[in-house]
Image 1 (tube, helix red, strand yellow):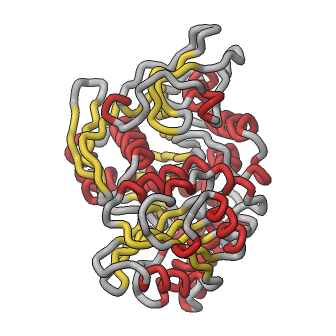
Image 2 (image 1 turned 30 degrees about the horizontal axis):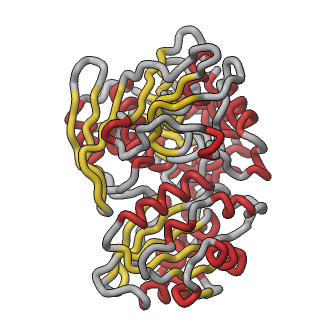
Length: 463
């Protein structure tokens, strides 16, 4: 390592230490200093990684998939560096490399990467492994429509040299395979619809209001033989005949409850495993299968993959659990319509749900435009008598959305302060019940920071 890289490491370490002493998150700011001192720092350090440099991107599931993959690699005895706080631009990755002393060497780098940042980060990291989870509408005021997001990821994947693991059940993700560099191996993964709890009847995409309705090859409207959720499933274009590609790694949900999933995962060599995943929902099943596909591509064996799945209990703010006044509180990042719907489905299906907190902010990282809330199926909260507390900078807007969704206003309460709102939700739930906190990004950060000061959750940089 040259003098600039070593100076960048020293300044980055100092910045991280100072920020943590001040009780602040050391995620992006130290990385900016690191890259100012040595713009080539990420390239230099990632070039020393001994086994695998993996990037994880897509709309939903990046943090969870990366955390699962890290656990699988760690189970194989590897020293792994991951940007565990979810700071997924170049500066956040630089901070993680310094924080984990990657300058002295590591076995693997697992980086979750924002879709818009993928091309730049991949140019620095030169990944030998990539995972693309899915594409859904998200932060339209920042990204625009999905075509632009897909194009950003496509350009990033041009830098991959090794294996790309693509979600075959998402047509926009599957279509990326044809534009990958010729030397890249493609591994398709997905869920078996028969065991997923999805819709097995033929689906009219227009009537269902799916984010992706049209074939990227010819523009024809898809038909579906089965659907897991959103536009993920067994699609086919009747005009040109293009359809979901054959999948190499397939997950099957064997049993599910509010606490998690019992899953089977089948690999192309005929090997399979069964594991208990400590988080619920078909969307987390996709994360598990994507991580397992990547781990196998990196040379991780079945026992380590199973151990990684079974040790996982939720990444930072993604179905993360804590105990508060004899209740279990589940923190769930909720940032776009399809992701929110899947979390609401887990809440509605959980017989142990005692109360729900919905915290909506409209900061830059959340997206200023909150009109997407009207596309979320909050009507799932109508059934039963579970109290709902709303909070955040757009609490009143959220209350209006719930009113128009038919929620009994006697069940609804507005509390402006997020920490106070959580305490109110806990008070209104029975002892032993589960309280779900459904939060946009800055609402999650703000609430979690307060909980961290109280010692109720671990430091977010630890994942």
